[in-house]
Length: 77
Image (cartoon, rainbow, N blue to C red; front, side):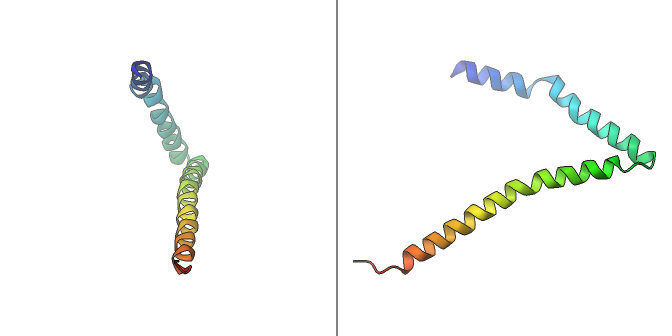
């Protein structure tokens, strides 16, 4: 257990992971100022990746709700 905590802390506190966000932001700002559409593509990609977890959670919630509704409608003996 101690090894997993140390590994998780090393990953969270790594400065290389923080640098990637700054590099993407700098590249997007430079392209946006230059009139390129790369920043728009980056934003679209972020929205695309962000939408799927919500779609999956929504689908599971709807299926669970239907299952519960059908289960409650059955006669209880």
